[in-house]
Image (spheres, rainbow, N blue to C red):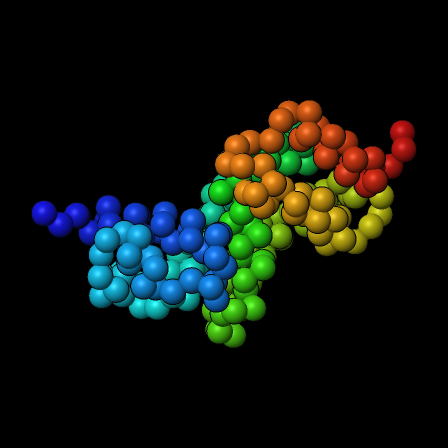
Length: 195
């Protein structure tokens, strides 16, 4: 008995995500995904025209979920520092496999065609980086953060989080609360204006 099409598509995305995280874009063949699923390559190509489309289909849902989370975080009352804390908490309490999607997108982007890079870059900016920039700008506008370029603040924050986007560093679990608090405190001490 064959699986329903939506169920198979979901399984393809789950297996592809794990294999892209483990092997990278260039190191993974569609054949390996098909073998892991026990289906033919034709079944994969029925759902995704090529590996690039499959790769983007792995990345885009994560960005959609991140947009929802960032919108919720930005709507919270209180100081911007609390919103940054909520963002770090949100990201670092995700299973490592989910956190790795951020690294996967930025690290493997150069493997894609110019058209796919442009499409991904637009969505990445709109749903993730742009929202973090806006949060940083809010902290500056409120006089809570140093008057720095908001993009510098965003990339400094992501740079601090980047080591935690590797499943090998933490296993597939959330980070301890003390680690999350330490990372957030170190970052905020650098960007907040002294009171």
